[in-house]
Length: 202
Image 1 (cartoon, rainbow, N blue to C red):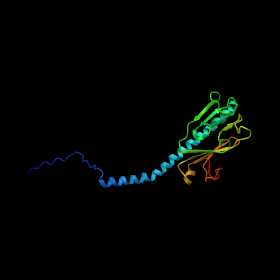
Image 2 (spheres, one colour):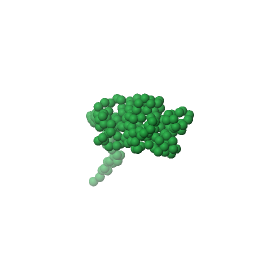
Image 3 (tube, rainbow, N blue to C red):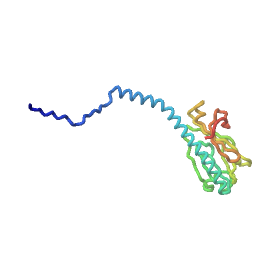
Image 4 (cartoon, one colour):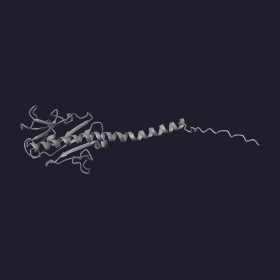
């Protein structure tokens, strides 16, 4: 009895891959759209908070620099708005080498300058940092003082101009300088909460 040879099986690997169906693609896109919608507000809040903290930290760094320079050089050091009137224009840190309690271009030693804040930020202040010619002055011992003598505790608040209500409070930081020179930043719980009571320091 004659045997017949078995036919050779195709040894080539089969390609079992397939693409997405139209329904699968639509469902995937729908899920992605929902996730983006949910994530957008959180991302916006994170971005706003980062910008605000950056500005507040810049102000704290300027105040710390002025205090350090005053004690190191044994002279008064000041932080003033770059335009002499509004903190939103940025600020300048300088050593008052001629001891006239004012910035004298070409004479006083500038150690730090901060450019103008974005237009959606506003800055308000109390004490010597408020008024028409605001300033923060440190004496050679590192204490904040007024030009007329005495200690100069004060608060500088940075907030956004495009928010209101609770959203505005969330995007407000107060930089508080005590009469001993201690600095802290905080977030108020209400518009009248000047002491940031009930909130932790940032």
